[in-house]
Length: 223
Image (cartoon, rainbow, N blue to C red; front, side, top):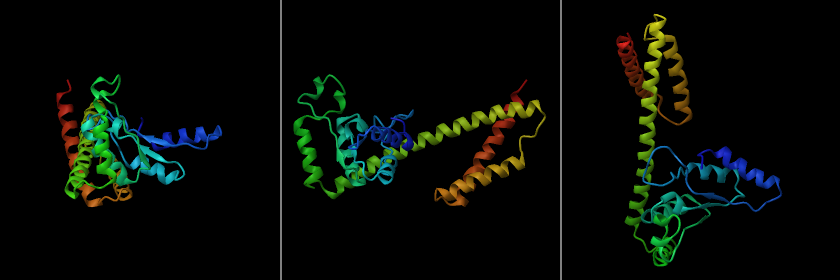
């Protein structure tokens, strides 16, 4: 459940080392500390990277556990097929409301049959498919936005702690050499990620400006 490609690949390799050659990976989504539209966040790039690293290993998508809600299962199933998953694992129950576990995410047989028809007979409209994809992609964006806010909040908290150390040693808030090092590192990472350096530089200039404000405020409040 950890969003770590190396852990997933390592688990598969351990099975193979015991002589078990027929191994499949099940993509059930990944646990994350922020809430989103889904029970488990899909992070599609991880199973897709696994397929690239281990093309002989089928990767089966489990829309039920990713969605956590029967109303979202079709959306995730469609997306799984679109990105190239090798199959789907979907929970079905004759009376989902009476299921002993995971009742919210299970489909009844009629809903399952309708889903199969839409997925494989392509009776769904192009607009419906586009709407589903947009909903899923926007849900991923929402999670990433939450992660960004979490990261910024923690960064500013650290800025306050740094201010305490600087004040104790009578250091200035602005440390030009340190800032130069930070900029160099983030611009290098930006290029590796395919981001425009000018955009990243502007973003981090704003972050640095806010960080200095936090440090000055924290130092002023210190008794």
